[in-house]
Amino acid sequence: MVVNAMVVAMKLHYAERQHVCETIYHVSSSFRNPLTLSDLRNLFHCYFIKNPWIDANGVRVKVGQLTFFSKANRYLLLMQMKYVLPLKVLYLANILCCQRFKKIYKNLNRKINFVIQLAKLYEPYAFFLGSFNDENLVELQRVAEEQGIDLAEFNFDSESIEWEEYMMNIHIPGLLKYGIKS
Image (cartoon, rainbow, N blue to C red; front, side):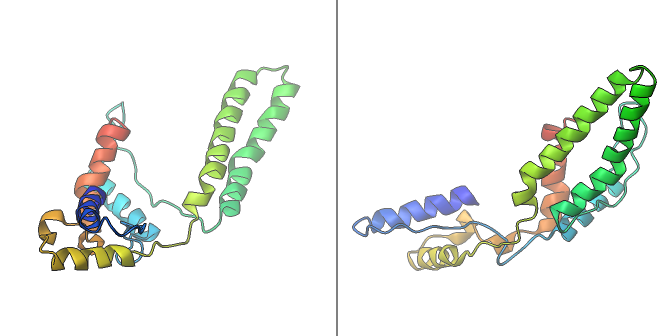
């Protein structure tokens, strides 16, 4: 979609090259055809119910509902209560037992700190509440149609995205095959 919109924009702007005007086109679905986190959670859950994930031992992985947090501090509080606090108990046990659990403690501490740092790193993206206005893209489609460009051939209308079909048949299988290497 993005490439198709760029090709059409280049064609139209080349024809009007005497105009020195910079236009920003948001090729996004957040304004006219949003995919909500709730929808995303339900689609992932549905996918793994229909297509069970088998672990390295050949055992089916149990699928539960994903939990989304409205604020990062709620997630960090959960991490503190569920993982950091027990880790501090392990730290004390390690001291009392003459460093017997040192290797386990260091490994768990490293993993927990890594996850917390990831949460802090991705906080601006995970909790972003904005949407992108795509009025310029709609105008580009209108002008392209007036100029005789076949919009069906260049399909860059975000309203045409069928999220369920895309996620279930393209995105999640591709993520598993190429991203997670299942």
